[in-house]
Each structure stands twice: as C-alpha cells, then as structure tokens.
Image 1 (tube, one colour):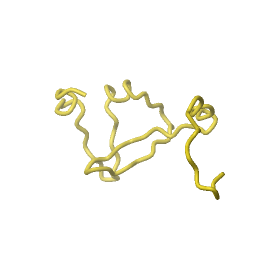
Image 2 (image 1 turned 30 degrees about the vertical axis):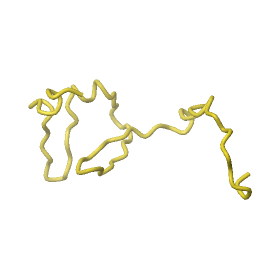
Image 3 (image 1 turned 30 degrees about the horizontal axis):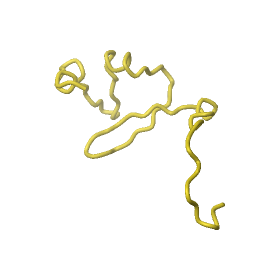
Image 4 (image 1 turned 180 degrees about the vertical axis):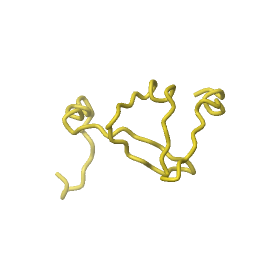
Length: 77
C-alpha cells in the first residue's frame, strides 16, 4: 500500500442516509468484487474492513501440505 492509496480523493466515499456506501471502481477492480457477492464486515483497530465470503467448496484443500505433527494433549488425539 502506498501513501497515494490512502489519500486518493477518488477513494473517498460518502455514507448515505441508509448507511450505504459505493465501493470505488479502483478498489473493486483490485479486490475483485461482484454484484450480489457477500462481504463480511469487521470493525478492527478503528477501521471498517470488508472480507469476501468464500463458499465452503472453494475452501477445499486450503490446508493441504500443512504440518500436522504437533504435540497434542491426550484428550485431543
């Protein structure tokens, strides 16, 4: 992230009376986000973050290759 992306006037949005905002095109293109797509909204460290919700089917295999040889408590084996 560079300083320009923080203060770029094209990335400033206005909250409507219904608390809606329009995601600027430059952000949508980098994300990318589609109409109708679900986003998780988080308030973190004084800012709002939008996280795309991914279908569970898409998550299949995301941990493939992870080292599972960790010491476990006897009741967790």
